[in-house]
Image (cartoon, rainbow, N blue to C red; front, side, top):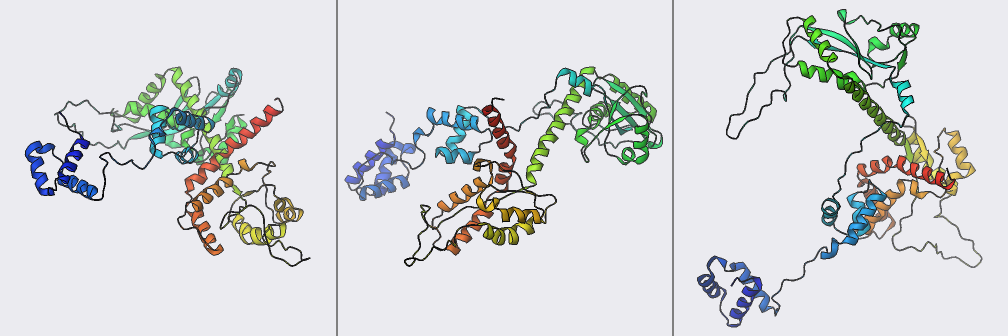
Length: 476
């Protein structure tokens, strides 16, 4: 018969009633059960429990999440939250459903089998005719050094090793000094030309009879006035390229890395032989590889467009006011006054107070530190009063148009909610206005910057949702 915990506790209780000492009882258990006997600390703990009058042999109920935390109802609730907002965080799910983070992890990864992944960007949706008209005539060009010998990278000499075999070693080699610079031009259909550059200065025109849109980076030789003048005379249209963006050049992220990886470890007798090997490797690439290269290029450009949207929102200064009280507040202001005396609303925000207490001392000095700021504010009366609008126009403050009755569009509303929840969780709530101000400053400083960045990144999605709703209402 196999004894469980409650069986041993019953034996301990029986010997406790016999008034045996703990040492006598332990020696008796060891002689009977050997290594299966309870530890001395367990016997001592239960002797103490029985002395305090305990009669139950079962474990006490554990404090924590109930066993019903992982129910089908909660799983469905988490699924709805994810469908409504694909960016929802653990903290938001925990606050919404009042369940622990461990339970949320089980629901997400075990029950729902979902993962949080970074989105893959896609290009604009264009028709096939539009793609053919604009893409097939684009030629991208760039230069790179071709070495007579370039050592293999770390992954190329990798070999399979059985257990017990020695790890392989390889002597480090340096790239050769002999080299040649080549200019390579590619299109979506195929490789156009690879031209060795003499003294790294000569750039020849390719196929002068073909109308092309030339893409190149912002190297000084390409942006020089003489180069631009020559391209203009030859009726070559230039495709703009953002500065410091090698990841947007097809030759930088595809052609040169792919071909050079094939040439790594090969030794050539002269720069001309190395250039010829480079040309042959480029010509061996099938046409579908160039097609994939340009599709990847468009995805990268779309990513920049979406990042630009975020940068636009990053230049906007969000503003708002919120009320924080020392205790529960019903929205009514109570004052003591004599009969016939009018109430003086010192605690209300009006346009004059908004200008003299907020805008002049705090907002304007901050806006002066920014390059091209835009101020966001809702349509509260102090914000849209004539004197306030005149103040903004006089100080050249650009305002962001804001739809009426749209608190859900303002990210700062969520910031107020974060601060309010922190004040509610304080063990000792502030008792004075000064203490309340100090706690508000602490709550503001403790908000992670990542949370604020997440709110700002959500603005394109929020505005897009409003536009989509508006179009649905108008039947468009």
